[in-house]
Length: 198
Image (tube, rainbow, N blue to C red; front, side, top):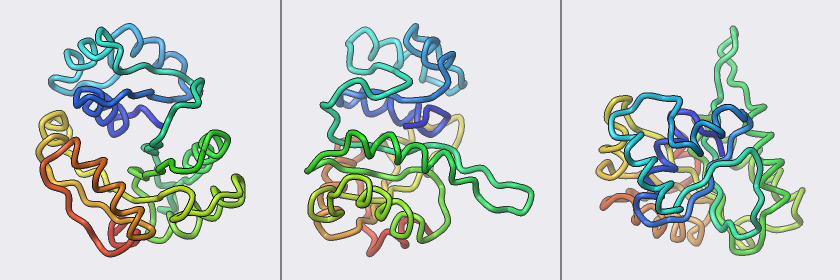
């Protein structure tokens, strides 16, 4: 969810590693362009990988979740700072609202957006639990996996840089580690959601 620089490069990289990916963004012009194989951001190697995965039908783009088949939700929306250096969490909360309508037992929710320490535990989990009646760590699994790529090298770094994973519980961490190990050879486990957010 969120197809800016972070979300789009990750979505295409995951599709390239064999995952079936749906990229979600509220901007219809971006979705239309991506479904035609044209990216709105410049990143070396991205356009070619995008076109190849569209041809393989391993990636699609939409403004909403059409399917009930999703198992993993990765939130990569922007959290820009205002004039007082306070992050805008409205896009994150809108993403949670959309995901809460589809979330099922066994699903994973992973945050990639940059957020203040504590947001995953204090905002994300309570919101999803309240809206779904499901319990984090038991019915669905939550982790924080920070974005760490440098513009201009993202397509290479996404498959080589170690991914840092912090889960809400040991099961959350385990499932998240298994997922991210499909993208990169090294996954670093940290002790908590907050350690990963930091």
